[in-house]
Amino acid sequence: MVVECRLQWPTLRRGDRHVFQFGALGGATAEAMMHGGDRVEAYLRHHGSGKTRWEPETDGTSPEAEWGFAPSLRDDVQRFAQRHGYRVQRVVFEQPEDISSMVADLYRWWYQRLGVADNRLVVDSFILMEPYWTTRTRSVPFWMVFNTEGSFQALEGYLGQAPAFDELLFTLFSHGVDSIGLVPIGQWRSLFPLARKRGDFIGVVDPASFPRDFAVFVRYHFDFLHKIRTRYPSPPALTLQELNEFLNQAGE
Image 1: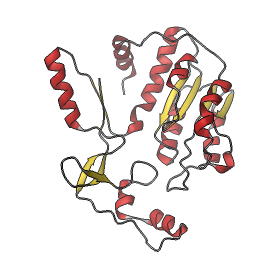
Image 2: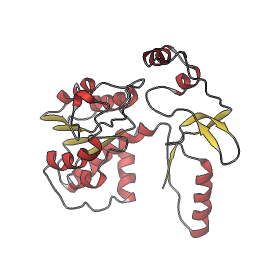
Image 3: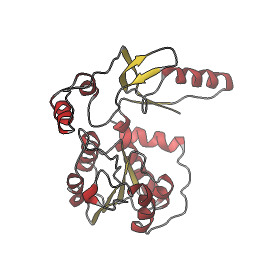
């Protein structure tokens, strides 16, 4: 299975193996990073800069450095598969969060198959995630790129169309900067009432210091285990046949 995110970003190339990228996916768009705008100007002014925009040099686009998929990798996979008799299945999407809703729905479907409740959504933020304990507690995962507007909209959109959950538990990545597009902690908290029983943060120690609540990197693991008490045996592996069955039912 080849997971291919098509996200591109403006870059500067200085040879076959030297590609430099200014900025990355987050609150500010690539357009704002490259050409500025009102939000960039206000941000720089707020931090005491005399500039009104950044001035990166670019000469094209490349697969985005964190999320983008380089097609040459697929070529290698296909050659290997042909040589050794494997099938190749591609999962292709434009933005990293594009399949978060589908994965959450897949887990709900799978847990129902296993005969357990599917009533807790755990929201992962960037690198703050617990894949092992998510399945051991039969929690439904929803992964967000970051703590900025695009991620908030993706989560809000999913909660607006999915059957309600009893519990909503959010991790929030603290990156230390009042950056463009940062969603304040109160806005994240505003989603808690969408839970039928409980909404809470996981690992957030000092909400008032967000996005400088750096204790979250140590606390989120222990907080996860403390706030979710249910335990199940490790589930059997989801088979490709089951995955295809789900996809055929899920449609768009």
